[in-house]
Length: 211
Ligand code: SF4
Figure 1 (cartoon, helix red, strand yellow):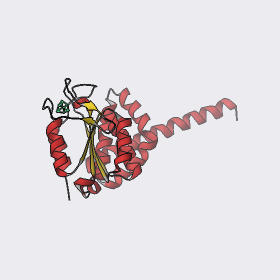
Figure 2: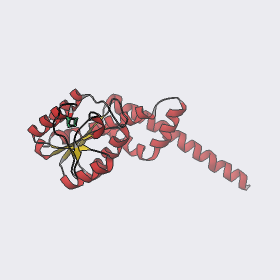
Figure 3: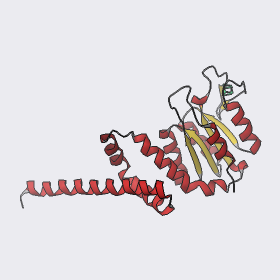
């Protein structure tokens, strides 16, 4: 067989493999989100390890924001870890919120363990911190993903509740799944470096969730 023919067959094989992989991953994602069955969710998480990037590239070609896929994956990861998270005592949980939720004139200083909210009341963190700590949570305001991961290693919580942008939440939830620490992630409604927004009702509901 001619070398060019062999190359052509290999190329077509790769295209076929990728097309089938993306299609199966996309269908499994829709089934995982719509049906909510854990077996579809687990299957999707395995497929996503191979086909997440090509799936996002395909989504972009159809003018779909890849963040939609990130949000669906976050929902799946939350579902898979929810029961174990809810079984964990509040006192064994760590809650991490990003510094970008603070008011731009926040007077808090950064310490090695957190950004030290002084409860000035300029933003909603004052209230959520108070409620979380009354329940027993360890509460951290984080300047970034690396800081958050370090605090998880140091605090060694039995469960984590995190608020972050889709990118950092994906990293954090993936790490928690890998380390066997049940976590729940709540994506920001409006991202960016300052004056971001989150659904505080959803944060409260997840914070109080317990079985
Ligand atoms: S309530 Fe806390 S986090 Fe919010 S602006 Fe005041 S000191 Fe900063």
